Length: 170
Ligand code: CTP
Ligand code: MG
Image (cartoon, rainbow, N blue to C red):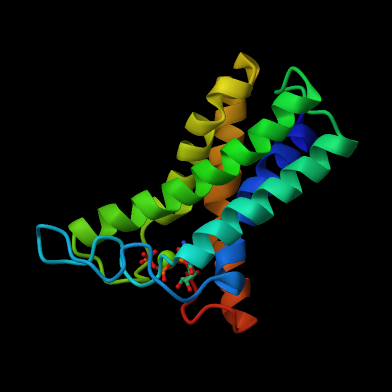
């Protein structure tokens, strides 16, 4: 298992997931609209600017990595670059999907929830599938990526809270 390669693969995913905290705000993706259950579709924590910021920052981070460090999970630099966009879009889609699920099961915005810690990674891995080699999805690679993320996510949120970037430490 190539831990450095896995960390470099995960890096743009984490950049995409965290940049909205700093760069987000403004108009909500759901435009304030409610679903059939009379609850917000996504909630006011999911903004258009945050979504775009996540996709752009994650893509830029992944493309910079592609220029200096070819990852074994991609067959070529161009597939690694498209992969950077795919994981970033997947991360932000997974993040919004998580909020959609949380609103449906009636968790207030910002409540801690296991969905927050791993769903974005799962959806990023689905989105990057067309550009990635099969080895990315080996059992040991998946265990490392989910294990590391589930441990790092609360730690990162704790630090973001201490830095005053997030109101709650999760
Ligand atoms: N954010 C954003 N746009 C997004 C995602 C996040 O602007 N698409 C910003 C919001 O300011 C949000 C913060 O990043 O409050 C933290 O993101 P997150 O924890 O995912 O959102 P929550 O506010 O906790 O909302 P939810 O309960 O829906 O997860
Ligand atoms: Mg949250």
